[in-house]
Length: 148
Image (cartoon, rainbow, N blue to C red):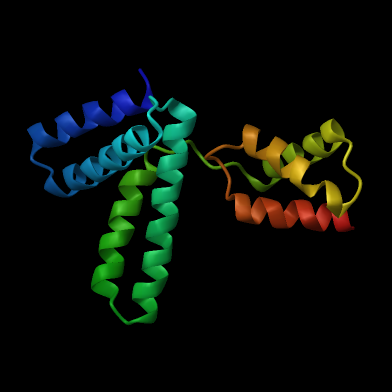
């Protein structure tokens, strides 16, 4: 069963169970997936679906920080609840040691030796860590590793 099919099944379950909050978020997810499929005229696979989910989580994190800065905890709580439902579909996050191992393997694989080679290393790590690591933090670690 693909990730998209799983989300659709969960929508049906939420409908039957009367879980309106979860149902609303799942509908948002499916709408975002459908929008990307229509825009790009393709059928999304699991990797592409994960990227849509990651983007949605990132948007919610940005919204939470803006709502907290504006002293709107009520709206921040709504965004956090949505983020919890979306994150349930993402694979488990990699630990620090696993990320370091991926970075080392990517550096060895690409033959990177200086910060100029960072793009190749980031691309290699992103391919293996899709949806399982914060690529902003990973990029910073790669930069530090190549600079030092």
